[in-house]
Length: 133
Image 1: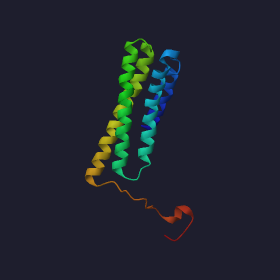
Image 2: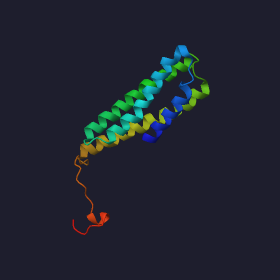
Image 3: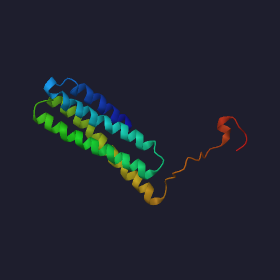
């Protein structure tokens, strides 16, 4: 999901950084909203607990929803082209579905108790050149 979110940010920057002066704030807000998606996916992944991870994925999904809504309005206002919108919307749709599937998968892990919130390394010290465990 993170790779798609990063790709969406790159595409968003390409499309919206060219907005005219009077629409500059609108373009900057759209870029910032999409920037929030990949950042929240990454921050959630680095959290210790599953509940925190899910919280950040939901924030990422909300930021994406904000961005999708804006893109539809910008297209209707002819501020972005049909081709730009279609490319952007296709990637955003794939990302949205991916985030939702990841959330569902993690919720199932939580329900089944298949998630460990500890930092205990569960591998042999042999991987690090030590014979003792």
